[in-house]
Length: 50
View 1 (cartoon, rainbow, N blue to C red):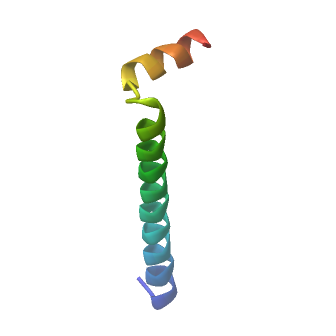
View 2: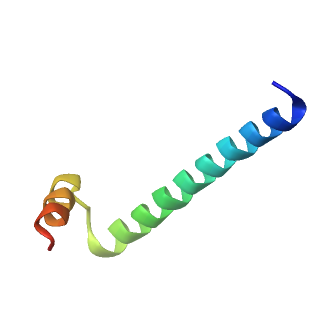
């Protein structure tokens, strides 16, 4: 693996980590305002189209 490949790998890993942190913060904010989100009910609503 060359230097550029390694740099790209690290940049992608950092990007994925930051996206995950943003999603975690958004979820925490949403739950603090509206209450807990049930993964099961969200999945069922998604399947049912509601």
